[in-house]
Length: 68
Image 1: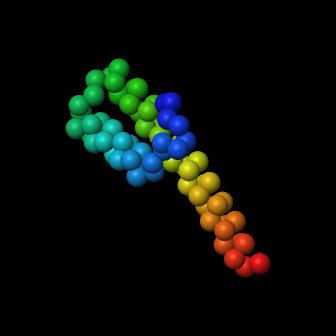
Image 2: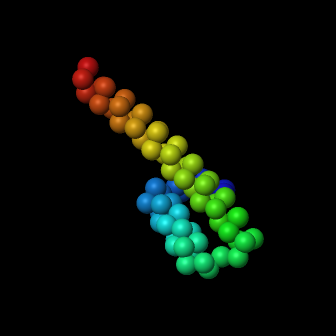
Image 3: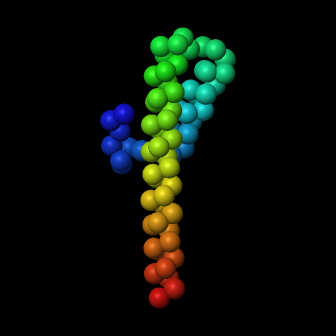
């Protein structure tokens, strides 16, 4: 995926994954599409995890500054 960091939206990304899962559960994907869609979902989830880690670090830093 070639998303720029500033274009990343956590909620939109989760919605994309949910749509992929829904299509899989409904059997709407053939085997070729299944592989590419699972890969896409995995990449989106990886970006979500990275985003959450960075957000957690940013919050901890901000809260740490309040304690000083």
